Length: 292
Image (cartoon, rainbow, N blue to C red):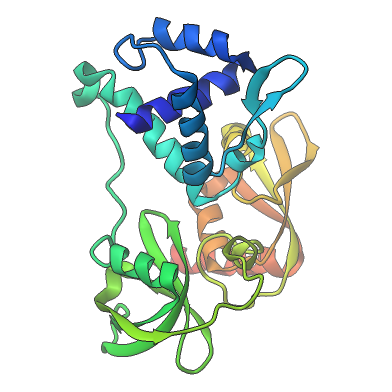
């Protein structure tokens, strides 16, 4: 599979830190990437172009050492669709090469809301308005015309960020749609709009204008290791540490999505500051206790 060849080139260059074409060609044959066939330079150049187009990954060449290397590894560190696609295809390639273990690998369910994904992606690509049928949980359904700005995957659900007829930015869960129709009418995207920047101050998909805060979360025992190895937000950083705890700071808008994620860690975390966010968390915990 051609994607497998792309992934092999990216991972091989990342692990090695740089290889000449001859070194890369030798490893290609040793790993039997294309059933032992030799990698031609013309094929390699086409692969470089495809890798740039698909993943946004630049394969540069050091003109002094003639070694090829990944010129922008930061692309694989953010929450971009290229990084997600790269990770997904990497896992697919590993499992494809290890078919004997497929019954011993347990994966999460596929994301919900795939039925209208193709139509929405087409609308985003061509800047066409969408007519969506939508029904929130526990409410009557309605039909809206929206300008589709971006898609976001969060907790196994796809969400559409769009501007509605009232010129308001709203987030719509694809699994709550019962219609998504591409309209003939086009719209103009705001110059310089960035979906990454729009969601940058938030965790999750709620973008309700919650005030920006400098939140300090104390994580105890093993929980601090979970947060250290899988940060919740790009602003997360360590500000203090003790024998059995680590304090992480976030510059974030602490919405219900963020607080709910912290609650999922139970007694493993505690909001230290600010006081208003700590109080909000305390009230949420008290509401939970009423159930018990």
